[in-house]
Image 1: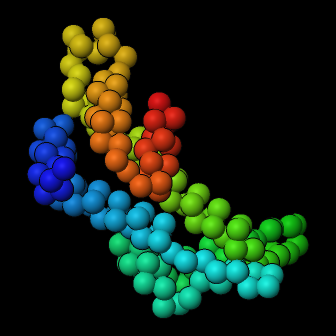
Image 2: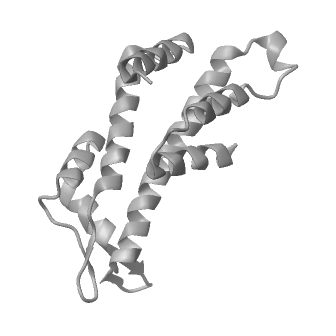
Length: 165
């Protein structure tokens, strides 16, 4: 498989369904951020999770997402419980922090997937077709399955998108 050729084909397909080049680069930037989220190394201390301030993936992911690195790190490693009178903040274990990190990535990916499905379906429908067909998403799912030489993180994201259908 030629990555450059596959990338050009992806860009062409996105253009065909009406996604501008600028929007495509925003999508690619978001996907790159998700990959970097997956590469963040959350370590375990005796009782808590630890994420180094100089973790390269943390820096790249937050930069690509346009969010504050220290705030993101804080809420990956901590939880907050709000009562009537107090806010109780406590540390998460490494396992819990990894679940939070993966949940954030899954939510972002699911939102992007839903948006792509809506844009694709809108682009491919007209009044005559819309009354006869419920969805065109089967084409997208089959293409994704064909390209399933994916690593485990990408396969998880693909499965998430498929299950949302």
